[in-house]
Image (cartoon, rainbow, N blue to C red; front, side, top):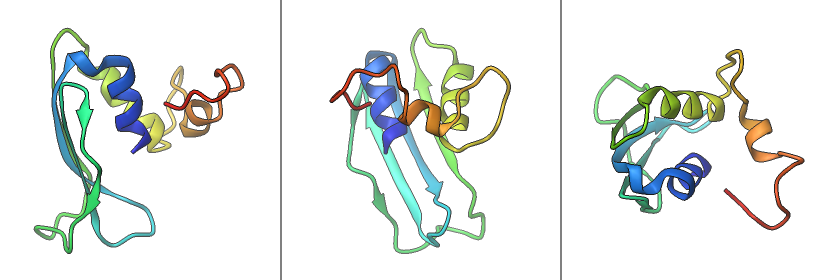
Length: 103
């Protein structure tokens, strides 16, 4: 959810479409995410996975934004460690963030 909020607030006009199903650690059900032009709908859990592949799958259609940036942003939220890329806690608990402003 925070991934979508950050993407929408910072780059919403450049995200033409986003949709996907996300595997959440500790939850056996897939989370559905989708949005158009910076408007993201409330995520919801499906009753079951559509097939035997229980991996996260996200499709993003962008205008004027490098797709690698979106991949790195998602990887950070998924805590996939990479050099020169912030992890989830760095993005969520940034000591330089303005108090009361949530991404």
